[in-house]
Image 1: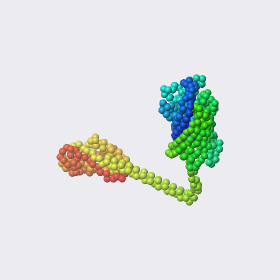
Image 2: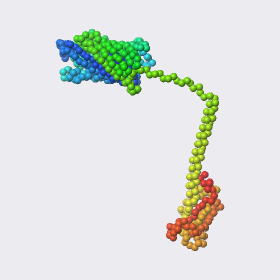
Image 3: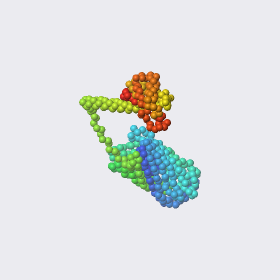
Image 4: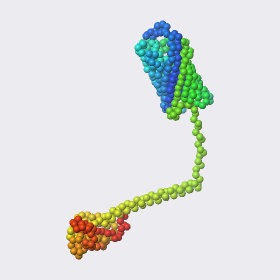
Length: 456
């Protein structure tokens, strides 16, 4: 649809039921000239007070609209862009909701509303004026105007329907009609509206002519509840320009009932595509490839064999990884057990009795030896250098036999152990002091059989 002056998508001064596509944004500027050689002055009660001054003015409007979910159109407007001493601004917003399901192609129905702020024209005018259709100060739109009913034009709710009456390859004809309050009907008792008031009914038609390449020519005519308007708008692929005439059936004796000519420019951006909404139809997708007949019997058999081979390979890799992990764990256990079995025990001076700390070490060995019956140990017994050689050899023998007796008492066969007495011949630490002697009074353990069973 073309861009309106103040309602988003629609004709010049009336909305239509369709809305902008999702995330499409349209910004619109419109301006029109008012030229009246002689106006009618009114007092603060809205009564004629004689002839006024000629009125020459260019009036500018701006709007920004966005479509959401292909169902909603929202926007904001600034009407009568000017400084306060020259008439001020009227700001507002609009919203429209499409009600028809997407399956209905040629008919739309929507409800909407437009809200405008009340104008403020400085100290030269009373407050309480209602916003007019042209955004100009006029005491006839004051709710206290003598002899008239109140005017309510801040809020303009409406319902509107649109239909495609004709459709061909080169053009479409769209008809729109609806009813609204506020600016579509309020003020119908004022002399400048009374003879053309339609009770809030509005309507219009637009002929859309395709120029190719996404370009479109729109020829439009409408009735906004009080005035008949007409014009043309050219869509150049998201950039829109047009000209229009307001109040084409009116005379020129008042601001409202005078013909006004203007221009309109609009930019429509499709944010989801990151480009202007050019209206071009996208090329259809390429046809799907022919259906795959599927693999042959030979190919299926080969796929089956390949699948079995892959499964076997995966199983072999899994089992190899498990074996490797188990072997690492067994090696770690074997190393730990070997450290315990080879740990030395020490004795007090001139003693062969098992000390308390040695008992703890020997119990650790017992636990492993009970679990590993193939393991055999050689017990190398030693003494420090004090005492004669024969005495130290005998003392070492007694210490080795004491260790065997402790292990046998724990349930181990004495035949698994061999005692070798070294006396003072093989000191662990050289030195003639208590620290060296204490380290040399010892029994060492050497694994002579069953090493391969450790850690299992």
